[in-house]
Image (cartoon, rainbow, N blue to C red; front, side, top):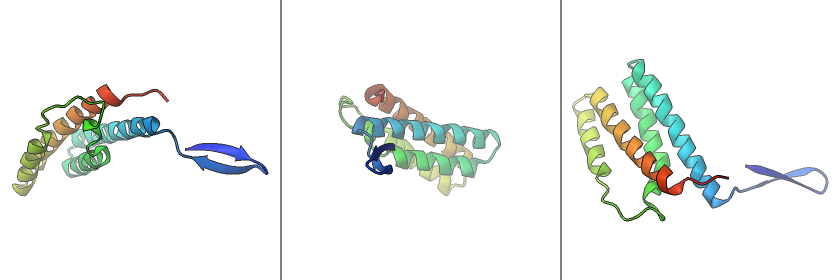
Length: 117
């Protein structure tokens, strides 16, 4: 948030421009991805999966919004495979699938939505 001072030193918070919000989303998802990698390296696959799910929820479908060109997005099918792995209690496999999906989506997001604020 950006603070501005008016009158008697009363801080007023201003919303960042939309393009900066988009950049912040990408940065937050990148941090969640890194934290998931750390958890997976410690064999804490459930925590890694929770972080990857949070990253996907944060990114939502921003990676597909204009100016992204029309693409065939099959990552949703991969998430179905991850859910199936969860049902079979193969959390490590689910983490690997979810990580790949989040990396792909974040890469698309960064390629088409990276702005400098």
